[in-house]
Length: 174
Image (cartoon, rainbow, N blue to C red):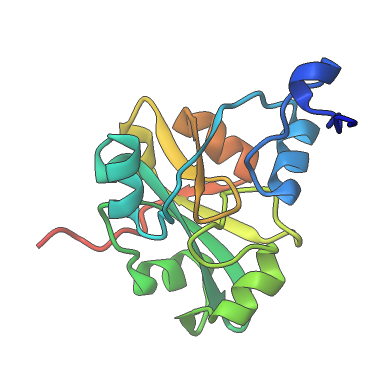
């Protein structure tokens, strides 16, 4: 009788693979960022689901949303409790028309599916706007490339690594 031996991170001395999407894990490594990536058994496709899984406020979740400004993809980073004001985005970009990008454009632009788009580490270089409201928090949580994974970072660092321009693009409160 023989016993099969399987190499695992525990018995090779290697670090366990990151639960982040491989493209995003590579971006973290390239940026020299050592962040904890949390994986959840259930998808956290909405800000509310992510906040419940993490145990934080919905406003501490970063939504990474792709829009098309005159047909050119743009990423908007918004807190999970707010909605993007498309007219404010249009004004900020000086565009004639801004619309939500469809799932195909999101995947082609970022390399990720909707619900798992991180704030950086995308397939293509895209203009990024970050709503100033993100800076109201000490720590924010964003997708790590899949609907099952998140990571935390201070918002100033997140905005810097995303190459974002700070803007006021949230819908006014009612």
